[in-house]
Amino acid sequence: MNTLILGANGKTGRRVAERLTTRGVPVRRGTRAGAPPFDWERPDTWAPVLAGVDAVYVSYFPDLAVPGAVDAIRELTGLAEKAGVRRLVLLSGRGEAEAQVAEDVVRAGSVEWTVVRCAWFNQNFSESYLLDPLLAGDVVLPAGDVTEPFVDADDIADVAVAALTEPGHGGRTYEMTGPRLLTFADAVAEIAEATGRPLTYRRMDLDEYVTAATGDGLPSDVAELLGYLFGEVLDGRNAWVGDGVEQALGRPAKDFATFARENRAVWLPAAQLAR
Image (cartoon, rainbow, N blue to C red; front, side, top):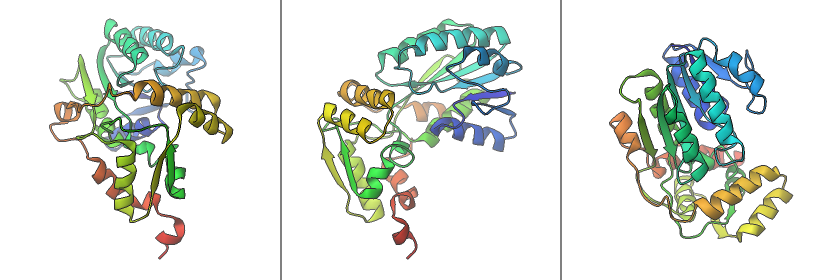
């Protein structure tokens, strides 16, 4: 089964592509550097990359909440139908109204679909915008006492691979979370425990955070997206644990403490690792 991975360089897409390749499944990486190339900002690249594909993993960049995302998913789904795609797995966001409209678009199509609806990733702490503050020992975010069931990207990839390659996942929406609720301060404390480093967590006003992030060189659209996620989505609406991992795989989701222990070397300064 030829499988197209859109977002093959991202946190989940990269993992999905690696797992499929290990299984011997032919993979087409939907990236700007791919052959043929794929670019969300160039709809003329979409049909060629779908040609001859049986299954598609869709990770929209930067997020399904941004303007134009729903229209892009609608057009892509229509092209997938015309290309004869049989399975489509959509990476979605919990508590995002726009993301759930995109889910409905996929559900309304003729391609067998699976929705993988996710909370904040554990890997935001190890592979994304929170890595540098953790290396510096001081994390500042506009997040207080609201809890999140952080989910591991490895779990997401395992579920996506199952949905792409195995029967029984069509027409399912999996609520992907970790097994317990944590505040961002709790998560930083667990990383401190795993690494043995003193890490501090401070809360900042949302507007100040977005302004500071932009001033530090973060693209304005990314800073605005973080403002939306912290200011609107992180309001308690997702403060409950789902069982999507267990439903799809028959095993528990990875706990944040396990993630922290497995990745402790990522947050240790080079001088400490050299000892």
